[in-house]
Image (cartoon, rainbow, N blue to C red):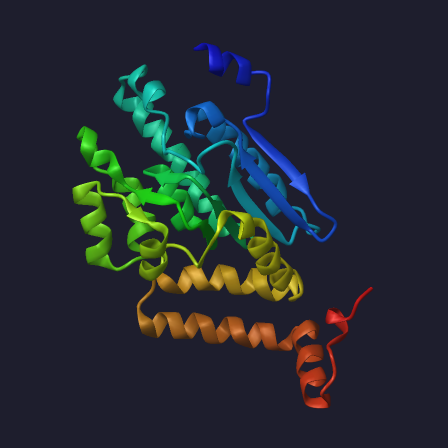
Length: 269
């Protein structure tokens, strides 16, 4: 363990803060290593996500990074220190579980992106439901530059940007800027650094103002239908929407729309 890592060993790998509206911020906390995803970091983040997913008071999760970067990907030094096929298989199985947990938790997850998001860090951005980036951020899946094709980041990347654009990033290792990332669909919004937190807060407030049950149901269906053929997707979507419609929350919303009033669940207090 090097000196910076030894100092960080007494600190949590992931920090958690909450506001009074159900918005939780998880901050990757290895700033000296640009928040590289070590085993310990992924274990800590997995534990936090599992607890938040089961907490009905949590409405939105924001994923951020401490220091100068969002996340620079896997911890290559740790990987180099464990040159075993079994170790690598376990490591990527751990990462896969983490990424799937982000999509399977009922709350929307917003990536708060600054600095750089590379390799598995770019995968994190692509996996989060929403992403807001600072206008100076650089994104990349640059493993190919050291002879390592970013196949696992490519899974999330190819499901968010155009297929040819994703493949070009993977085979060249070239970085893209925030405006290009937005144009390609990797992030939702790009803002100056002094507006980042305000923009995310506005997005989170908009989500918190909607019924949690409907959002959870919709998020689960959104990802399930993406992996299906169109006929199966419509069948599942129709069943989900029918269940949503008979829910009292939706019935109240429809009644309020017809009566031209606010729904009861949207009223203060």
